[in-house]
Figure 1 (cartoon, rainbow, N blue to C red):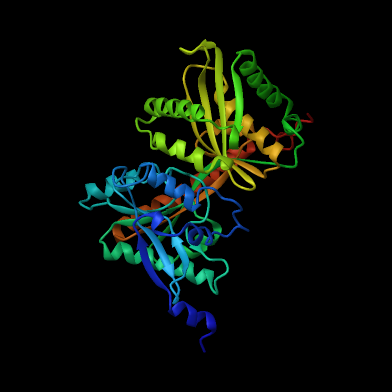
Figure 2: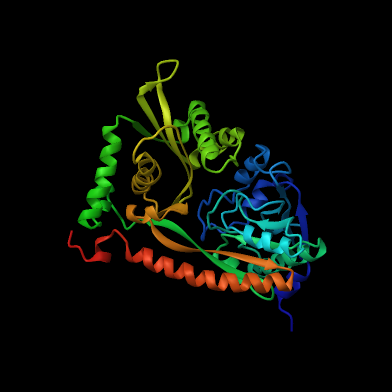
Length: 407
């Protein structure tokens, strides 16, 4: 006999929104489970809208919004997924270009593909949004997963990729055709530290001295480092940060994903979620005699986590990157009582500064059976390698209890 939840799921219908502002902010934000991800800034309607309104996301950038929706029989939004039609694989932080090249050499067409993610944001969070107060949230997630597969079939696409999903999402992203992939990020956990000195006291003596030396080098350089949030953020800070971000992107990647308007809108609409660390050099005055901004690190803040996002710099200042991106983030998190700092992907050097490796996840549905078999073999072997890397990196932890140093 069917129960009430079965009757309720019969009335669910799937749709697509071509822009996030086609959906009411309150309706979208209501779908996020605040118990699991309190104050998560990136999944908010406002953040996704700023990406679209600023031109960072859209047809020209190769990120076409196609947000998946699920409504109940009364037309109420009960599920959604931030989905994009992609003509490339840039800005995802889970690299599948090798898959694309192999498939196209074999005569297939890999692009366009579907991507369920927060653009340019390698942060774990909800991807299959299901109203936590609806009769059957897990059934909503399963309906979203079925809709993803159907979208690939109906549009003759190669694949759909769900990157950095939550644990609840991963439980739904299973079944025929779905492949699980692992990666590595570096996170700092707050163990109830009173201040940075208290945190550093947990390091082995040699590694503690190394951190102190790095921070003293920045202090001795004369560079001033400011941590700005909320009303402290001004237009001049965003102008300077975009210039630094753009210059660094040009040097390293050749493409600045985020537009200048994105940063200004972020400051105007989400300033209380922003933690911007900016460095200026009084020895390098600008045309108006003011210290020149020489480095900046952008973080976004949820209720219990600080997320490191973008870095920009001008000039060679030893250890300024570590100070602005890692040490100031830890200090801020301790002061605010946050549980963790997520420093993002890449960079084994983060381990020696207290950020330990954790496993990240993604799920991939590959339509072509031959490509799926090849990718499945690859990700199986890759998961083993990731696990081995994490074990090796964890063994090199700077914390005293890891290496037996008495202090």
